Amino acid sequence: MSTEEVAVVEMDDRGRVLIPSPIRRRLKSRVFTLRLLSEGALLLRPIGEEVEEMGGKYRGVIKTQSFEELEEAQEELLRREGRVR
Picture 1 (spheres, rainbow, N blue to C red):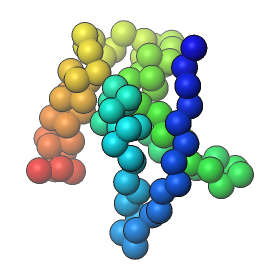
Picture 2: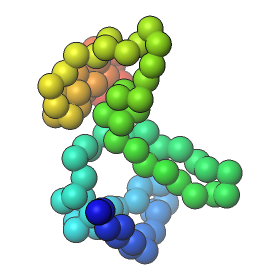
Picture 3: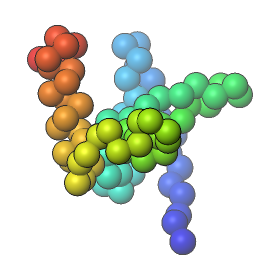
């Protein structure tokens, strides 16, 4: 059974939100999708979950053994595209 953790956080003027360390320690990813829900809530989901849920012709396209490998592959892609240094 998983337990939920709740924290009050603040967004700074640059749009950054600090995730408290007790919550960060439980996360298995450092890369997330961010979704704005209709009621104004934000939903963060690790990229790995999004890939695992893909179906159809995209299933099995990304062949990694771990979240770390997926993160490394994404960072390399972003570097090649010039979106990150």
